[in-house]
Length: 97
Image (cartoon, rainbow, N blue to C red; front, top):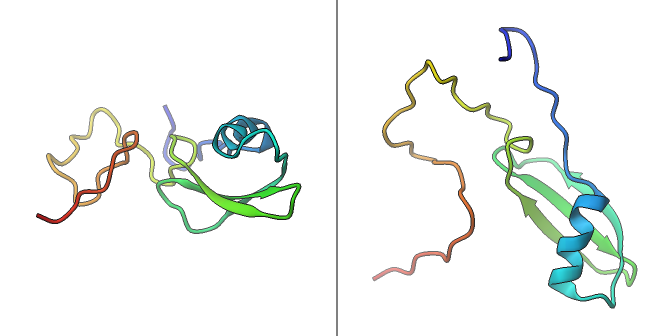
């Protein structure tokens, strides 16, 4: 348990963690040449993935280490419905009816 005043060590994704995903998405014809973590994602990690052919893409990583907001302690009851619930997996955007 983290005590008041202590900070949890955050470890972010790097080239080794993202190379497999990049190869799956873009094929083996490109090599991941660089990974830069960008500012601004508080519930997710936002990364610029650069390839050896000069192209780049933006990748998002959701995970506990990427989330700036710590999970509520078990002794604190979380609200029944949050206006901004945490992301869980992937889903298709809803289309208006």
